[in-house]
Image: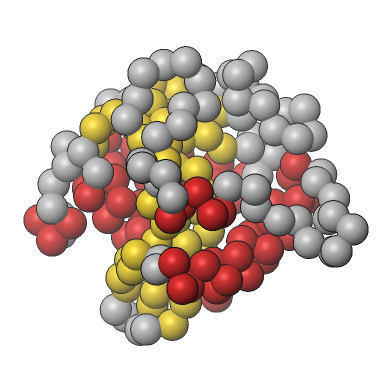
Amino acid sequence: MNIELVTVAVDEKEILRNLLEKYDYEFSQYDQRDVNHLGLYGYDYLDYYWTEEGRHAFFIKVDGKLAGFVMINTFREIEEKTNYTVAEFFVMHKYRGQGVGRYAAFHVFDSFHGKWQLKRHPKNLGSVHFWNKIIYEYTGGTFVYRPGHPDALYDDGSYGDVFIFESPGKAPQERG
């Protein structure tokens, strides 16, 4: 299986928008969001990924096929000083449990050296288990965990759990 992260070009924005709808549909079971009058969830910040510094969007591809996406930015969830935030992270069902998400997360962390924040919804148990494992493995257990942080609010009123950790900024090919 060949896994790669590919920068989303501006002319591929609609592809990412389509994947975001699938992601938001799945996530709506946790944050209880409704669709808009067009039957879409929408993603208010999508255009900014090509017009603002500090925003990066990547497709996750497996054997050349779309398998998900990763979006990062520099906007903090909580007031702790960090360099990067995982804004959105999505692996399609077909590719879960095969190391695709691990590869994508490690690759992004290795590619952007600095201090990270990651927020997760406490009711999304798949995400809870995934990020517990990934962040522990990536950092060797050296991270800060802020459960139910009041500044990390979701649409349903849940307080998000926030991880703070450092990335050594290794080149992705250096990691085994």
